[in-house]
Length: 349
Image 1 (cartoon, helix red, strand yellow):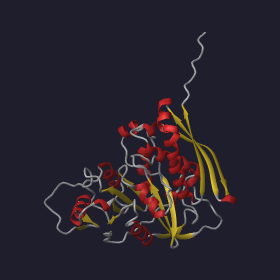
Image 2 (cartoon, rainbow, N blue to C red):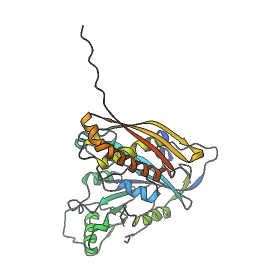
Image 3 (cartoon, helix red, strand yellow):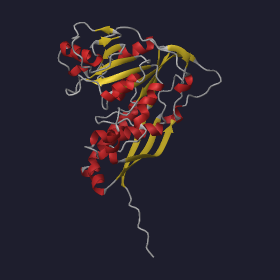
């Protein structure tokens, strides 16, 4: 695995007011503010390109919900790591979604604005592209290009994900030429066909990284690259913080992602997941929680549960492992299925 790096990023100073997070992501105000190196990174891309998996690999925690289905991430989530006196704040965004998809998958309307919001908070933008999809590997998603073009003044770099599936370097170089329109950091890539007028990508990437987020190849290069280009400023979060989400919200999202993995078609998108109980027992270094999963019908509840409740137990086991990887402590979780109650008809007098 190798990384193609052409020039160092040069980040512009941005107003600290733009870096304020949502609700629980509000940085704690301390009497003495810590000064260190900070970089805010917006990670964008088409649905299921591997954005959340990439971030989880770099921060070494399973913070961002990830599954094998599209639209696992439904809101902007911040994941932080602190290394070598540097705070990297990743802004994990939902995959670029249009109105049709939003209605099909019953997605929150806030998803339509989440990507643009993350870009306004960023010092640099990482565009993740899945090169394993034979239908789209040579073209950047047009909606992604439109969004990045809106903020050309912010440095951006291309991340080619799942490169381990490619069989030759020649194929990889062809993809790079297509996705960058033959230009990186303002310089033409050698042996690029100048006669071609069809633009398949974005012409303003500063750098290109080649990674496999699933197995971790190449992600360390991105982390070191960001550390090298961070700027001295007030830390937005404590060095010990690793997410802007509450533990309760993280648990709900982890459960939702696992149902997306285990259930077919649009079934998991019709479930309502709610945390009913949460307790963190510090002296025992463990978390105890209970999650309610509301199903629209008895038939669907039986399908999810599986024969003898086997499928539900399997889902619970995988969720527990993910949460232990996230919180770095023992997690005991109970999943409860129940059917959505129908409103009672009022008596007509």
